[in-house]
Length: 456
Image (tube, rainbow, N blue to C red):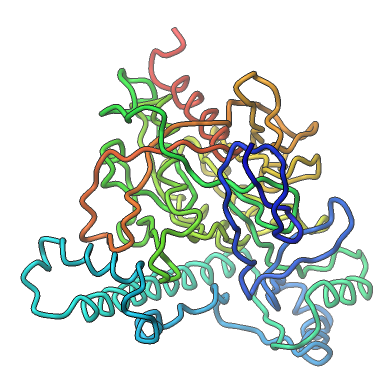
């Protein structure tokens, strides 16, 4: 028996859990909850709206004028990203230099071969290291904003933002839709999606990885199953330095899986999620090629615009299967519309494309997107007795079921000072549970079946 957290108030309860005790963080400051009715609860970025340009231009820009005059919405040239990175280097100056995390990070930095003879003090080294990481994350966010702007322009949409302290997004949506026929006016909230956890706002079980029961083997498997099959993993990124993933493809630093994005010198709760999923796929199809995309931050948050942008980035990658181990309940009038359009565009290029998505860990039957799209294979989780895992979503929209409890796979070094240029790689492993890890078992099995000669 282990203590878990109550989903609503963060208090401990005595329910049995697969996972150790862990206190979940608060929702980010730029995320809010909309609605309270079953099936209508979803997350959105505060003040963040997306609208069809053709609808904004109709009737002398009537809708645009309403959004600007009545609600103070501002049209942006590019979609806003997450909150800008805090100045972690300056925050460090205010910390106790004897704090365990700071001292451990300083010691780890001094062990790096490139810094052994550095004359700077450990504190200066750490401050410079955090500043470099902040700058790297800032460059990545800028690149994502530019990609998002291009994606929205391609879709004929524009991002709008309500002013701070202004009316809530759901109120604006309701008012705009009430004045239009049909009621599904071309404006919607930028839906927030989460990977693996559903945090503290819905019934779920907190999940952090455990050490593997057995040492990880040197390779994920033997044989050529999955050869010539390309599987995209849209997640927290991948560590191609891991021994299992040395042949994985990514855009380098942009898709590198960060451990400590918030600069608190401790591994973030979702760090390693993408690397773990890639390993699950390769255990079923060791010959497959993994194409990684970092779309989720290491706290587990992304949104519809960011996911759609990542899908659009695969247009020239000749992808056969996409694994999406993230999602969320959606605005019923516009469930993840940007993602929906990019899926359609990618499938128009490749009609044989298969998309596999996790069904979510809410223990509910409410639709969970993008898994609930009819052309996406929604995967629920089974426990070791081949019954539905207690956390798994369910319902007629769930298309497949796979083991999702105590899965073992590749993981990351939890050394927070590791960077893209200093990552030593290795053969780390972990044990994790969730529909996030049931989905890649299905994706990997499909990749194995697609390989030449596998069905003979």
